Length: 242
Image 1 (tube, helix red, strand yellow):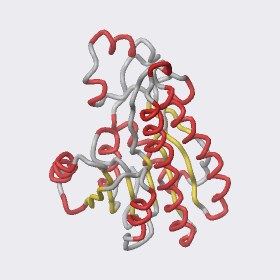
Image 2: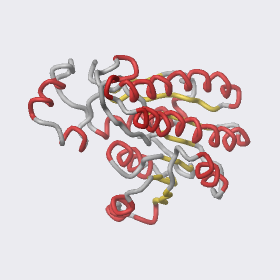
Image 3: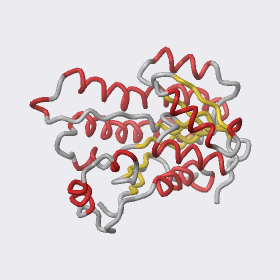
Image 4: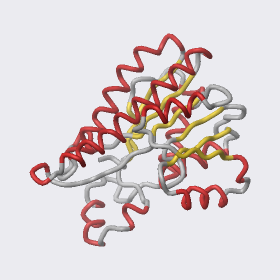
């Protein structure tokens, strides 16, 4: 559907769940992909070996909330990327009255600080070539505020706000900046829920089904494509109508 031949793509958190599907989508479209991960080396290498051509994918291990590590990663790249997908993220759910300060801080560090650090370095690299695509994976939680997710919702709302500002800053350099907001997607996170919880979530979705990781990946590829050259500062919702 899309042609990313000779384009270099970075997908943070790109070896599991939605991130793995995004990585696979870009690889199938001919891109040179670097997928980052934080700690699960076994899972990352297993994902790489599951690919038809494992050598097509590069892996990079570092924490996106570590500014020095992010800077070192970008300085080590052979060439500037055309696409950055900010997918790395964590959740530490708890109601505000019981939420440890450390969990509040950690979720914002990874989800929001990490998006800023990666985007900052990508913008520097992309500006020199006067072309780029930055897509951040946000969540409906940032708008709807699900109970027990104050930290997660704040981080995701922050991603959207940052995207709008950054899009205006870099538009003249032909860099677009957008968000994709997946709803309830059929991943290992849903698999761990009870049938009762799944049924409750399903009732919230007008389309009466959970989304697939491929549907999210296709949306990301569209925004990263040259066909989406006039879309910036926007959030595309992949939620089945939530």
